[in-house]
Length: 168
Image (cartoon, rainbow, N blue to C red; front, top):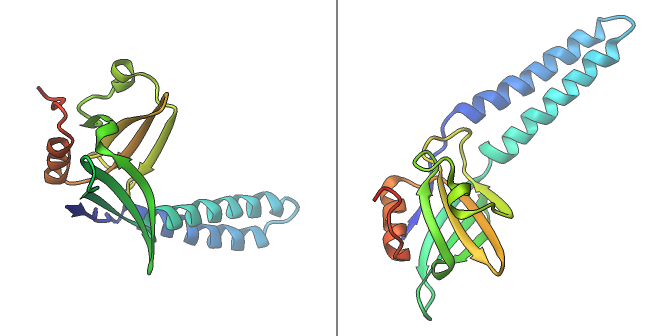
């Protein structure tokens, strides 16, 4: 079972605005007298933000996979896709999972499960409302993985992991 989230245009538009704005601000800085370097510094900062948005949200895809591990259950894997390069960035045995829930359904989840020591965000869109959180224990550490599957994939993942639903 696998799912690849679809991109929305918010990151593309924001990265274009920052990159184009950086060029415009840089050119304006060339006509300013004494403190041109302040304007050009702002242009460099805009260029950095635009490049970060482009590299993090526009040029990267993720694929979420649930597969049988041939031993004692299932594993949840996340692959990062950059052009033709595919890299496994997350591997979690579903037997270690404590909870899977939609972030908007349980916004104060750290009161219920405790403070997580690490948080990994594998969402391809900025400010997505359907962000799901997977919490698992790795030794003594509580780890949080954020991802954005569709509702069917998330429901199937909860069923395979044999977890009680947070809505019950």
